[in-house]
Amino acid sequence: MTQYSTAPERAQQLAEEAIKLLKQAKALQHQAHVDAARVQAYQQHSDGFAFQFLAACAEYGEHSPQAGKAREHWLGARNAIKAQFPRTSI
Image 1 (cartoon, rainbow, N blue to C red):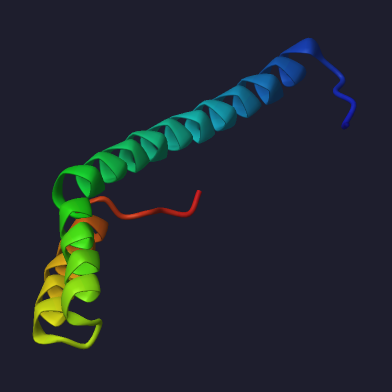
Image 2: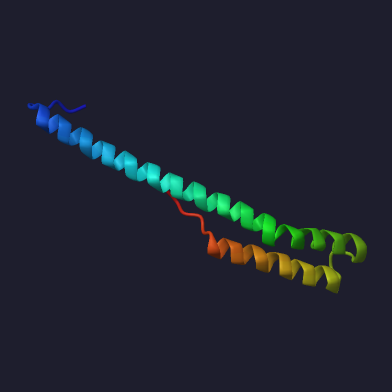
């Protein structure tokens, strides 16, 4: 840690560190909200298609037209959610 000759210099450095930490905390909080929204969107708009795909695979086989169509719906829904709620690197 650097030594400061005056208390105001130290106070300035502490204030700058606090601002940096606050910005990091806000970014983390924002990403947590995005992650929660993404999970909720998967549950509401994608998981049902995943179950339909699995059911089509079990009933008709993985390479059947029914399974292929179900897979397209499922992956399309997932891609839309990923685009709406992108992950960011913090």
